[in-house]
Image (cartoon, rainbow, N blue to C red; front, side, top):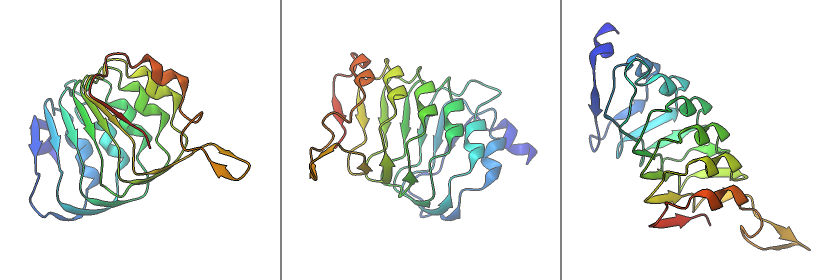
Length: 178
């Protein structure tokens, strides 16, 4: 879709959109400020082409996919959004699987990483410690992230949190992991 190559901002929140997020989102290579497709009824897998958004323009804005009904995993290609300086919000979206370590490549992000209230499992990637510019929120709570179990008793996330998260010294508002 050639016309998508000229779009610099996409805001489609609160529209009760149905269906899947099309792979054609990868044609949004000129996007600079917003990719907002939150609070809809979208389902299906998140396309790997999400990593191509803003690839011709240094996408620096907000990336919102929260409050949808996706299935499958977070694509590791999201780690290609390295110029993004604001927010990655994919909370309450029903995504599953592990948190891709490639999310740690979003080191320019200064505001929020919200992945809470999904079906995420596995360990918290130590690469999230590279997000040292985050100032507002890192929310991973309400998932099924790996916890430490001793003698059959869960100790919660104690000792399961990577020490690298200690690098997030600019984070002044919220860090919710459990």
